Image (cartoon, rainbow, N blue to C red; front, side, top):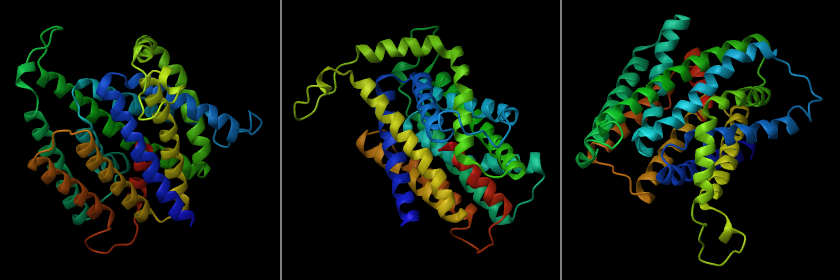
Length: 338
């Protein structure tokens, strides 16, 4: 029942989080900074209460060891959310991040000198090809009538290309962060809840750099229309809907992250990877159907390649293999993405 409930809440928390995220970026594509700030603030406050018992419980891993990890984690989260302001659709965002195994393999070879089987390289080739197909298909969907935007005459394609560059940077930074955390936990032992709290707490000062964007979007959120329901709910009739969506995103983000950490303690590495892969696919399909995002035949081909390659990489399908070091690295990296 422990594993079942963890899997259930991974799907509930992570999938609903994507829904609230898309509701926000549909109205305010560049609101990534305010979303990330409140996610971090909520997890930091909750951790101060439950992890440190209002500051009475001492940390196991030294604070100085968290500094590099904090920088990486903050950068990955901010850049991932920032990408929505560069004409990156939710389906492409999900698919692109599903190609994280590529970055994990490359960083494993470059940083740790690891070697992989032919099956691993074949799966990475499938994921790479699938990501390229989806990327090119999304590029074709850019509106030709918006070839030049008002500010500076920058083309839609150039803006979109900048978004792809941001996602690529975040992908490799996330892979490097996974390796760093793996080495950190090897040295001091696994303390995921403590790490989750201190990473988010120590990242908060970094939002000073984005204070202008946060204040601007807070004002826009306040001016948004009230949330309308089929029945009259007085309190909601006066609350700006974007603030309601943000609250839903923050709470479901915490449920998603905490459920993933719990799942890692209840299930095998292959089960965790499979659940996270299926969760992303479910979010992708829902996003396409409910929000009517453009999704062509080539998107489906790319999607099948990405997810089949992911399952092949982890050994869920294909030749049977014993759990390896690179599988553990993949799991650690996926935890950071969630």
